[in-house]
Length: 214
Image 1 (cartoon, rainbow, N blue to C red):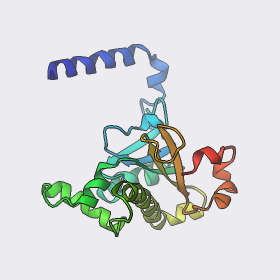
Image 2: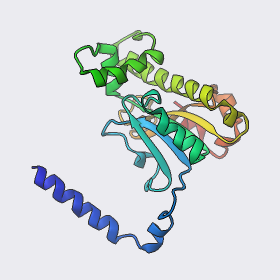
Image 3: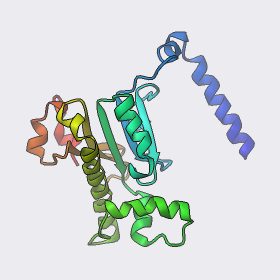
C-alpha cells in the first residue's frame, strides 16, 4: 500500500511539473511573493486550495492543531513581518478535531499533543453550552475570534497603519452555516463582527456579504 502511495506522489508530481513551463517557476525561483499569511488547521480535510486554486507563491501557509498561532508564532511572524503579506487569515473549520479533543478531555494524549492543545485554554475558556454539536460550532468560532484578537494585539501597529488586515473565517465543509458545503464564511475583520460595520469596510468592497458572513 505504501508503494502505491509513493507511486501516486510521483505520478502527480510528474503531471504538475509537465503542465508548467519555465516562466511559472522563474517567477519565484529567487524569492517568494505571497499576499496571504494563512493560519489554518493541520486537519487533512483543510488546505489552502479552498481559498486559492494554486497557492504556490500566493499563500504562506502555517498549519497547526486547532489553527492557533501560539504553537507556530515564529512562522506567523515571518509571513507578516518579513514577507509583509497584507492579509493575515485565521481559518478555522467545522468538525475540528482539536476543538473536539479539548472539549472531551485530552489527558491521555502524549506530552507534545497535550502541550499544543493546552493553548486552547486561552481561546476557549469554557466547554460551551447546548448539545455537543452546538457547543462545537460555537467553540470553533470562539477560537477563531480569539486568535484574531491575539493577532490584533501582536500586530496592532501594522493594522493601525493600514498595512495589515486580520480576518477570521471558518471553512464549512459540513454545512453548519447553511451557505453550502465547502464555503468559507467571515467572522471578523480587524476585530469587527457587526454586519453593518463589515459592509462599510473597504477591504470587503464588492463582496456579496450575504453569502460571505457566518
